[in-house]
Amino acid sequence: MDRRRFMTGFGLLAIGGAAGAGVGFEAEPAIATEGPTARTATPTGTAAHAATVTFRTAPAGKIMALTIDDGPTREWTPQVHRLLARHHAKATFFVVGKRAQADAGAIAAAVDAGHELANHTWDHKDLTQHAQAYDQESLEQTHELLIKLTGKAPTLCRPPYGRIDSVGLACCTALQYDVLLWSNHITGSNATYDTTKVLSEVSPGSIVLAHDGGPEPNANLMKQLDRLVGSLKDDGYQLVTASELLAAAPRA
Ligand SMILES: [Zn+2]
Image 1 (tube, rainbow, N blue to C red):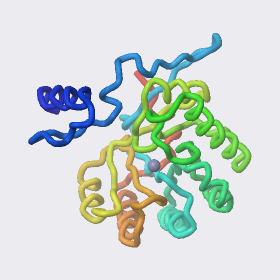
Image 2: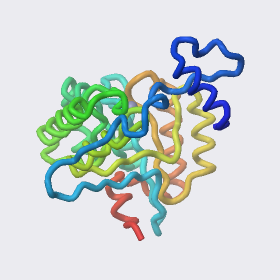
Image 3: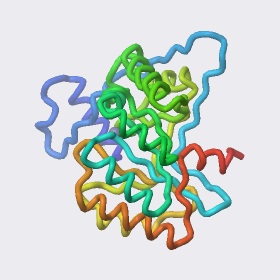
């Protein structure tokens, strides 16, 4: 970002109200107007608080991970399960807690198929825009539900919109989560183009994001995901769960 433009924007915002009228002004997220210690996380107790944040890994073998966010939904999740089964591929579903509660069958089906379930908060709110107590509750409620539905504690979190700060990270460390972001995104609006691009760009350790809930999924995205998974298989890739991907490439 152009530094001078940022500072100009900041000044306008600080004056208050008049932002947006200036020629060339681009509104910055509200968070940019906060002081540097506006959100200080305060982990309690004597236990270790640490989490990794991973965009991609660099494993020795030809493996990568497909991650599916924002479900489950009755329209799209079964379609994703079917295309994964067709290619004997595994994926990681970052589920929204309240949607998982409303569709426990989809969670059971994912477990039966060997997919990984992970935490994408209870109601998909931006963690950076809420207080620590809210973030903690949103992650814990989803954590407890996934234990109940899968018999296993999830170990990974992906913050909605990929946005997280020290407060959200502290909540993740309290649950002993690592944070998984992504290296490639296949959108709903440009699924064909994105899939072709991803297929030309991926390498061992890539983490691909797509959606089975929210505004992104559509019939062509499903078709393109099928093409993606089939092409990767043909190219010798094994699609593994995110936890398997992380375990296969321990940090140096
Ligand atoms: Zn999401």
